[in-house]
Image (cartoon, rainbow, N blue to C red; front, side):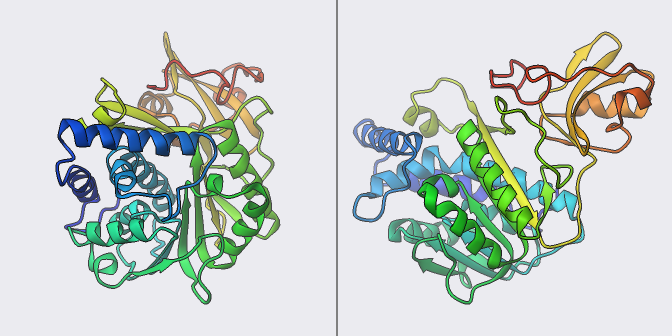
Length: 368
């Protein structure tokens, strides 16, 4: 992974936790208040609502977000942007536009990976989130965010007039918009993007449906899909499946307390799309679920340019087998793995709606 010399976005996690627990936030009473604020935010998000505006959003809500929601948002942003960097290794944007930025976790992830970003525009409708983002930046962000960034206190449905960027990010924003506003918003974001537009949503059927609708619209507007899709053709998943991935997130003590959780980690499920104005840079295929190990071979559920396929990788295919043993759900498969089963000397496997791809049921091997 490309990393900015001397800068690690983990600094944001430490700063966010410290801010969330300041002023007695670690004590019993204050922590109960934070837990209540987190439950209110969580219920709002799960019900399809958006982040409250300043008339409703309190400092407790912001601190609860920092402790229990920001870690997952940062982790997923890092994962998705790392895939962008892998697909376009020589691409270096200079201008970043972060739409619905909150306190800026997606920006921190982008600055960690893309060394030449010097101009940052962050659009956020909550003044409390903007104030928190500025204070967090003062605790260790690069100068492009700490002193040079422009924060726009406005809705993110349309970028500020005259603002364009090589890299635009809308992280967990589509689901906060009314259905009728999503199409025009995606069109406006695309108009403001001169390079790559990154969309991140929840790893649910509804989140995938929003991503799929955006994909259709962006392709019709001349985009090519950098990731996760291995082609610009129709999505091959049947109607009862949805394309999503997962990122394991470590939980701090206060994170566990707010969620009343015992485990030291959680698995954040997400869907994403990276649309580009550049030349196609598709992966040969994408791993759609955790590889399954059998005696002498592994089975990989792949999304390939010609559709879904289940590839049997025998131990005799040494390079492919070595790669497949280390493969994870969501990885881009190299060409020497992403070959039709019959071409690899093994009998083809029939794809069924329930047997290949991301199942409607939880995958018992996905680490959740």
